Length: 68
Image (cartoon, rainbow, N blue to C red; front, side, top):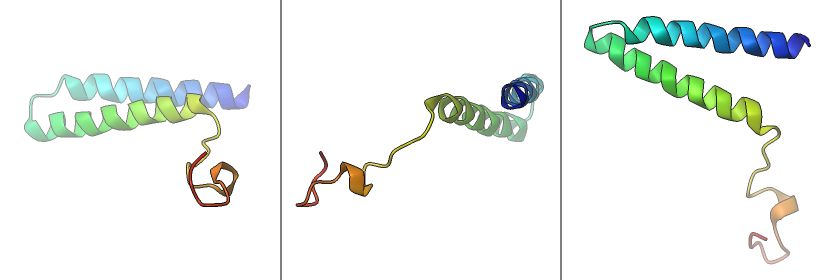
């Protein structure tokens, strides 16, 4: 429950920051809002993906070193 509420608070914070940055007029603000948007999308994707297994981990390699 604690993790869910903190994740919701983080998403709400990013949405508020994104909204206020998109209403800006300067080029630097728009560039910064783009960075916030990218960070927000990465946060959403990685938060919902669960544990990530690397392609080069030993569990995914055959004896010859090729990917399964």
